[in-house]
Image (cartoon, rainbow, N blue to C red; front, side):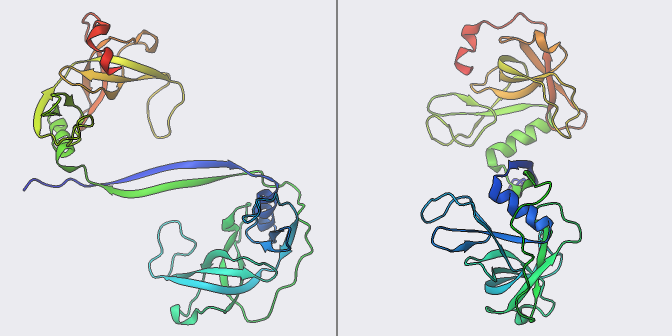
Length: 314
């Protein structure tokens, strides 16, 4: 049986968000060790605060301070904390209704006594982070507390130097398995060959192969070696330098229809000034040392391909 390929992959990017007046006050309040909610038209206090009433859709703006103490309404135990979670040891996820609030706030509870020490109805209080910058992580976690309700600071929700935006990292860790068709494609690339698969119905050759024809919906199994040369069908000029990518801008990223293929693939164009790249340019791969794919494509010196020969692939 052929080896099943697997590889850990990470998709990660910073998500930048500007804040309205309600969220700005809430996060600035956390920086100042104050927890704020917002009052609805019928008198309920929502924590965390939102800009619009989830029931009536009414715009909300009246900020209300609530206590840093509260009551656990429900909980779940985390035996093995994951990367980026609030605590690096087993803890409980809890919904806490802070004193003065009508809704519950989700956060971590540091419970040294283990899951047997946690129960619905237990009293807790906020543990503040030592360094605070205006984010939900300023609230480090909750901790058990049996001394009644904490006093309020009297804040009206107005602070100097309010937080107006946040940058939150978004990250997805997963294991990718390419399947039969793409495994053959990847293994061929290791030999500096490009292999696609032909549809038994429409006879089109798809690169990279997907195991099924995207047009006809039937399984594909006939392997066809294509290229290595190809034609630029369309392209874009990249002027923004990507993080962790050691390529000077501007550069060109193109769709390239390899000879014998009926689907264009992506590739960077090198060996030519960016402003001389054009549709129809004939190119060939330049393989990276020890790499499993072409580093870029360069001009072959052949005459440009006639538009009629690749117009269906644009």
